[in-house]
Image 1 (cartoon, rainbow, N blue to C red):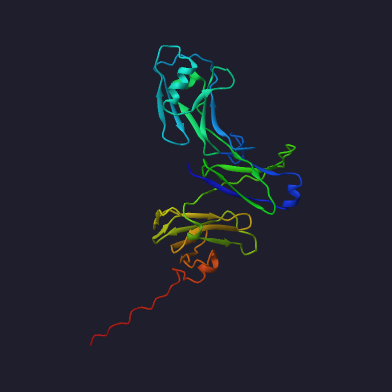
Image 2 (image 1 turned 180 degrees about the vertical axis):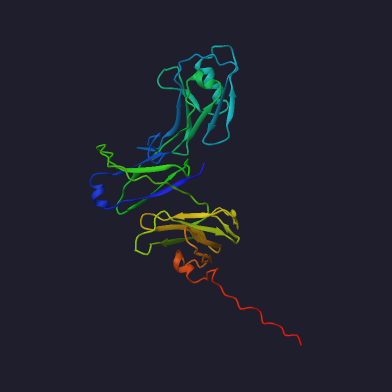
Length: 321
């Protein structure tokens, strides 16, 4: 599952920390929170993905199957066998023979089955299906663990959060929280995360652009479209060699309420750049100079010719006498 990352900027840190000491992160697949309400994906400390059965044993499970997807791995099916009804120890033993330590009893002396991942945080995930699901009383909805709430510290004003089981279509809100009093602030505006890149930051240049109209107003929600037209190879921190290839796949940035957009681009790669809604297009190469860490796209594009205005002299006619 892709990792989604975003940064929370804290204005007036001293005033915030006079009341709060942590940041909560909330998530929903819907920007408005409807039909799926926002739910917190952080907690006082990291938690495990946990599924509790609601049906008290013993259970008639001979020949029934339970398919488990653990931590976004491959789904694996478990088949129960034995003389019905099977007691809780038989069920736990059967599941743990395939997934060591996954199954246990819901505390305390409940005679119900709990499935619990051994990992913590949002990367911890569980989902089940199969004929045994309703018999044991499991939900088929995917569940995740939670990450620790973000601790506010002086003098840090920007805090990165990574959702290790997020989609590009997910939406996030944050709010301040006091672990001492339980006091909370209002929520931030919803925003989407950015996929975490695999290449080291040294291989990328931060490219940005500001756009306004003729009246000086910001151009909002305008797409900046880039298409890679050259090939470069880059080694990551583990020595893996990645090829960034020419393609028809587009890299898109969208201007915000200030007419601002930014993209991180691979050093040495050549892109065709298009500004949506205009005839403006250019082709430029991202600088390879390691001292260049950010680049104003408009400045970079102003030094290359517009392909529609290039004038070429006709060939000199050859006179045949």
